[in-house]
Image 1 (spheres, rainbow, N blue to C red):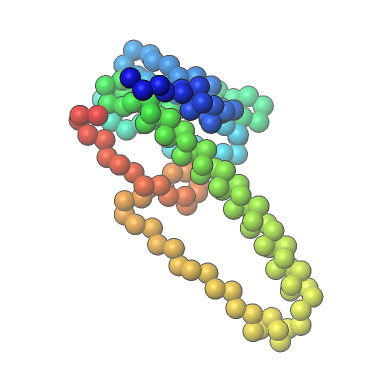
Image 2 (image 1 turned 90 degrees about the horizontal axis):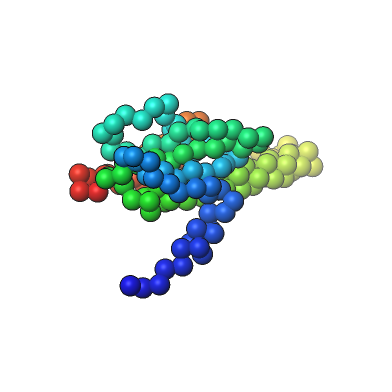
Length: 157
């Protein structure tokens, strides 16, 4: 068997990853994320027999929320649950960076409009490429337009 550096692998999810555990019928990854992060659709109760990975809000601390990413014991691997956590982290970090960039760009545009005369501003062209979303992508957040590719879960998984 090849050596696996599980400590190194899990360290990349610090400080978000709290626990990996198994409860009867389910595999669970617990995570601590910022209150302003969107983990995606949270469910109130798990329905037995559901094939999709579920996320449940399990607690709150000052400035943070605790979520459990839950999969069925026979249908999901811990790797699938960790991949979901990885997506949540990447999407929310990117959203934060985009927000910073947006705020910075707004300030630059505001300065440009304050310092430029109307004739120059009338000739200003801001070209934004049209981004299209394909049908194999889904909305990740309850309030965001962030999209992720999905893969179906089969009976064999």
